[in-house]
Amino acid sequence: MDFGQQRMQQQEAARQMMYQNQGYQFERRQMKSLIVDVVDTLAKYPLTDVSNFSVELFEPLIVDKLSDIYLDNFTTYNSLTCDKNERSMFSLQINEFNVNSNVASSDDTSSQNMFNRILIPNENDNVENLHSAVIHKGKKMNYVCSINPGKLTTISGKLSDLKGQSMFTTVPKAVDGRIRHIKMKSSTKFTENIKEGSSGEITNHGNGQFINAYYTDKGSRDLYFYPKTDYNDSDTMDNLDNDNFASAYGGISTPTPIFDPGTYRIGDYPRFVAEFVIVARD
Image (cartoon, rainbow, N blue to C red):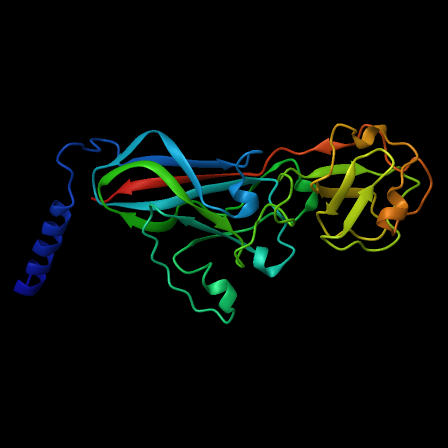
């Protein structure tokens, strides 16, 4: 071994020793797991509004050696489908992680949501995944960044699509992020394609206005929607008989009653769970 190579090894050993924590040791455990769980509520909805989330750890996470962080799995509940290119990936920012990823993109609006972010493929490709969990990682242990010794008590950040918009609702500033779903009777169907974001109204029974959540194909009997400010869930669609939905929304064959009783459902609030593995370097 020549002198130059020996000196480089000594310098690397010195750097490793400099980042050791004197108070705590991994001992025989060389890996630690960190689970980040973020869910909207009626009072706070960071996933719907794409605002900063902040969650406290159940107990402090102590990193005692220079370590590498890997994303082990990523699961969402009621996330949007990957039907648009900006929704092809989740853009996750964790303020406590020193993510150092560069980007070269022909889309300037996407670049800022990819630079120094954790990108996770959106594998929700079916609207029927509504009201169920979707796993978005095809392989384990994706490297995220390295972390120096320290103590973490809070995890904060933001989750969006590649345009900086919500991955959980198509309606900014909705009453809440819970999606509603109901089926129309077999004799009733959409007679034309209904665009995502189209407004509708149920007038006779006081439910109020809503917004179509997904692009809906002609011939479909499924209605997925978000409520607007005057929508009332107390008069559920199950009880509607001769309503004014067809004339208010358009594109509906009009026999009555329109809706199939017992199919109305309010989903749970949007949620994501990310599990990271922290591996101590030798």
